[in-house]
Length: 326
Ligand SMILES: [Zn+2]
Image (cartoon, rainbow, N blue to C red; front, side):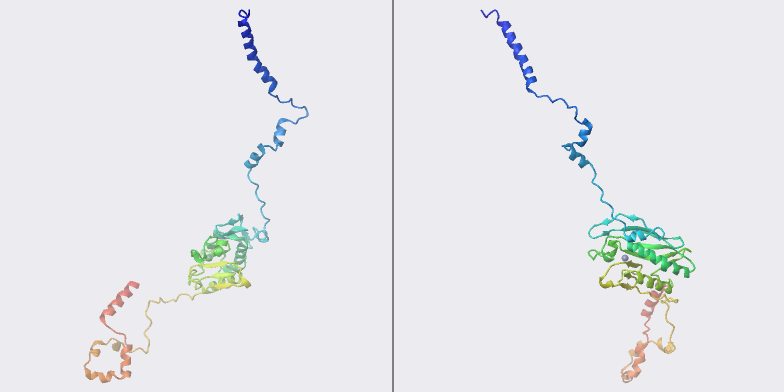
């Protein structure tokens, strides 16, 4: 009896089987609850949300910059009326090199407003720059006035330089590595004259005046005659030592003699006559035995020994050497 109704029944079963899962799914999968009316706006809530998005936002932000330290008393005192010395960032390393409170000393400003250029500009700690400015203003400017000119520039040979003393590898850190030193070769005057501090042709009085002034102001002064490394410049620094010990080593050499030292000295009056000095010595030395008793007397032999030997060979050599030197 079911045989005739079978296709319709199976069709019904199939339709139920296909529709049932969808209806079942609609009933089982939870749908979000409707948004309550009192909920905050979507955008505002996303901004306040401390969820998974928050760390990414923090990571994307650059780290906050540390607060710059307040200006030092030196920095406040070193105004544009004293020096053109803008502050530059601290230098840290390598090693112990660098330091805080750095400036780039470009010029010293004199009381009349004129500028003394530092060429090239020097990288220094503020106290060292300040000491240099005071030295130029109070000592060097008046010195230049005595020479009927004014100071125009300082010849900066070296300032900050991360290195050992005297550029010796492995030596103790130089004050240059702490931006606490300046090497200076000379002073340039407005009239174009260059006063080299280590040149013997620079008036000795000028060099001595500079020596007195720097040794009164700086804790280390090294120049010619100090250690062999400062024959062509003067080293100045503000190194702090136990007991306030200062080092002032600079020999102000005598000016070069007016007469060239290569010229022979004038013949002294007490020198023996030339005919005696030019007498050939060989025949006397080859004298026969009868001369021996005379040579035994020291008084007779002494003048012979002091006479310059006149062999022709040596005289020619000496002559050639003199020609080369001239
Ligand atoms: Zn130096």
